[in-house]
Image (cartoon, rainbow, N blue to C red; front, side):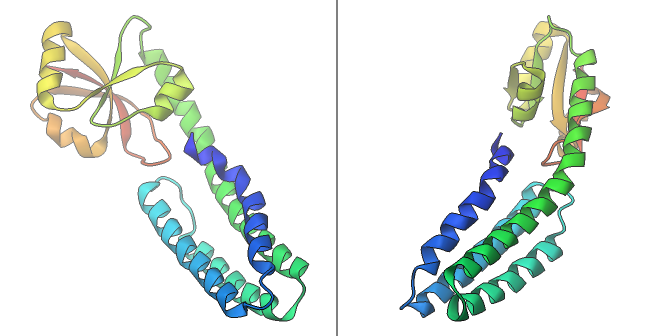
Length: 203
């Protein structure tokens, strides 16, 4: 899954720091690169907090750390040797990565526990569906394939064939199913959202 690439960040930070620390005669350009990096970090932090709402990442702390370290990097890039700049940049990404790992670790354990528990309600002979969403986490951790229901017309067709549907859905989609007999079986949180459920849908 995409969030597993987090382990490459420290190495990537060293490579980036090495690239701009070699620019001895073009300090202004290096400063622009650092400021651009800060803008990108702010953008990704805000985007991450929006799309991964279930991760209680301290956004303000991360932004303050990024701003402080960017200022230190600009000073270091002008006054000190290259290894100092590289060390500061590596330390910056290490601290941010550590904060993220500490916040994600406990959540990952909770998610895995709920996903594995949900397997008790899924018969091997019965197909699992998702309602208007992908289910990469469910597919991966339960080692099963799911089929996405894109609209209620498709849901009606499946219900006509099978009588009931076992599906993973989000809380925001529950209102769209008010005309059906919906029974929430268990909540299955993900990194992106808290309100995700395994549910039984009937007429």
